[in-house]
Length: 311
Ligand SMILES: NC(=O)c1ccc[n+]([C@@H]2O[C@H](COP(=O)([O-])OP(=O)(O)OC[C@H]3O[C@@H](n4cnc5c(N)ncnc54)[C@H](OP(=O)(O)O)[C@@H]3O)[C@@H](O)[C@H]2O)c1
Image (cartoon, rainbow, N blue to C red; front, side, top):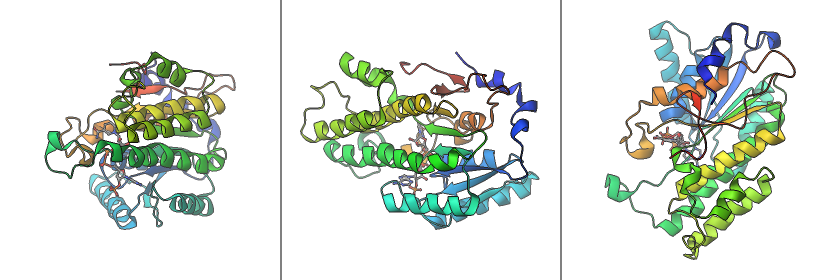
C-alpha cells in the first residue's frame, strides 16, 4: 500500500527540476462548491499554483473564486484562484470544448486536471427532500454526466496536459464505485482486465444504461446503483489512461462521505478534509529520476492507496 504522506517527505525537492517562471495551472471541474471548492482553495493557496474553477454556471464560479480570495486575504495566505469565465457543463459537449479552448488560449497548459464534477440522484427515502427520479431514468443522465462528460473533459485536456512537465489527473471517484458492487464474475474480470480499452469501457457504460432501461440489468450482474456504476467507470478509466500514458500521474480518489449538497448534507466528513487527498496528489513528488516509478493508476482514500475491491 502506498501512503501519500511518506512521499510528501520528499517535498522539499519536488518539481524543482521542472521549475519555470510561470505558475502551474490546476483546472477543477465543479469547483464552485462542495469538495471541488475546497480542492481549489487548497491548491490555490500553494505558492506555485493557480487554481481555475470550472463550473456550468459562471456566476457561481465567480462567487466561489471571490470567496476563496477573500478568505485567503482574511487568513493572510493568498489564494490564487480564477473563475473560468465560460461554462463547463458535463452534459454539453460544446461547452466542454469551448472551456478547454479558453484554457488553451489563456494558459497554454494544464498541469493538474481535477475531474470533480458529478451528479448523484438522492434517494428520496433517505432524505425526503428531493423529487424522485425513476431508476430507469437515472441511468442515462448519470452515466452521461459522470462518465462520458468526464471522459470528454479528460480527452480534450490531454494535449494541454502533455505540455506540462509533471502532468496529472485526479479523478474524484467514490466508495460507491468499488468493484464489489458488481454481481457477476465475468463483469469483474472485464472491468479489471489489463487489456480493457476506453472504447470497450464506454461500450460497457452504454450497455449498463440500456440494461437498466429494459429492466435486465440485475439478471446481467449489474448493481442497483447508477451512481456506483458511473464511479466504477471512472476508476476503470483511471487505470486505462494510466496504462496508456505512462509519463502522467493519473489516479482516482474516494473523498469519503462528505457533508455536501450531493447528499443533502447528510455526510459526516468535512469537505475540507475530503479535499486533502486530491490536493496531496496534485502536489506530490513525481520522482527525480527518469526511471523513478510514476505513482499512477491507483485508487486512494484518506491519503493512502486502497484496493479497488474494498468493502
Ligand atoms: N459528498 C460525498 O460524500 C462524496 C462521496 C464520494 C464521492 N463524491 C464525489 O465528490 C465530487 C464532488 O461532490 P460534492 O460532494 O462536492 O457534491 P456537490 O457539492 O453537489 O458538487 C458537485 C459539483 O458538480 C457540479 N456538477 C453537477 N452536474 C454537473 C454538470 N452536468 N456539469 C458540470 N458540473 C456539474 C455541480 O455544479 P452545480 O453547483 O451547478 O450543481 C457542483 O459544482 C463528485 O465527483 C462526487 O461524486 C462525493
